[in-house]
Amino acid sequence: MPQEITSVVSTLEVLLRERLGSWPSSWEGYHWPGYTYEHSLRVCDLALEIARRESADTDVVHLAALLHDIRKDSGRGHAETGAQEAAGILASLGVTGELRERVCNAIATHSGKNTPDGPVENRCLGDADLIDSNFGLVATWRFITIRSGHKASLPETVAAMREWLPKKDQLLALLLTRSGKEVARQRSARMRVFCEELMEEIARPNSADGLVTVAGFIHEDCGQHLLREQIAGLEELCEEHQAPSLLPTVCRSLRDEIRGLH
Image 1 (cartoon, helix red, strand yellow):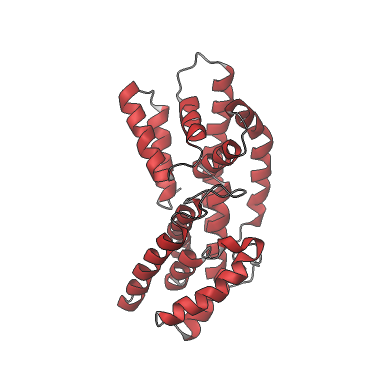
Image 2 (cartoon, helix red, strand yellow):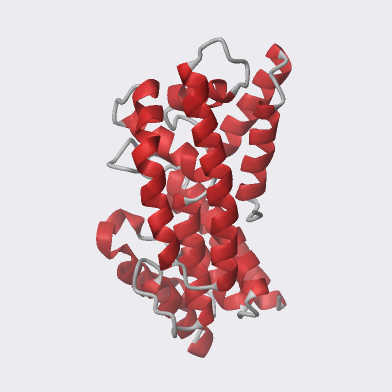
C-alpha cells in the first residue's frame, strides 16, 4: 500500500471511531451503540481478504469499506448519502480523481445495487457487507442481540432460529464473487451447526456443551459491550468455570471471523 494511502487509512480509522464508536447513543431499531463501528472494521478486513483472492484493487476496497456505513444514520439511503459525504472526506485528505470516484461508486452500490458485471471492487465490498450481517457466528451473535434488544426471551430466540436459518440460506444467491460465496458457505455451515446444537442443548438442560452459556451471555449483555469485549468476558468465563471445550472453540471462531477469516 502506498505511503499516502496508509496515512489516509489511519485518518479514516480515527474518524470512524469518532463517528460510529458510540452510535447510536441508545438502541435504535436494529442498531445499538458501537455495532456499526465494529461491523465496519470487520467488513473492511473481510472485504480486503476477498479482494486479494479476486485480484481486485485493495486500495479502492480498503477506503470504501472503511467509509461504507459512515452515514448509517440516514437509514435506507445511507449508501448514496455516504458516498456523497465520502467524496468530501476523501477530497479533504487529498484523495481525488479516479481513485475517489471508484471508492465512492463502491460505497454507493454496496447496499443492494451491485450487479454481476459491476466493478470487482464493488462486488467485494457488497459481499463482505452481506456476509458479516448474515453468515457465521458473528451473524448469530447479532441475531441474539437484536432479539434481546426487542425483549424476546432466550428460549424464544433459540426457537426462532428454525425459521431464521432458512432465510439466511436464501441470501447466498445474492453474493457476486466466487470468494464471497466460498466464505459465506463455510460460515453458514458453522452457524448452522452452532444453532442446531444450541437448539438441542436448550431442550436438554442437563447438557454440558456450553452453548447455552454463550448464547445466554450474549443475550444478557444485550449490546452493552462491543463484541471484542464480550469475547474477552466469555474467555474469562471459560477459565473461571472450566467450561467444556465447545465454548473456547466458539470464541476462537468468533475471533477468526472478526479478522476476516472463514
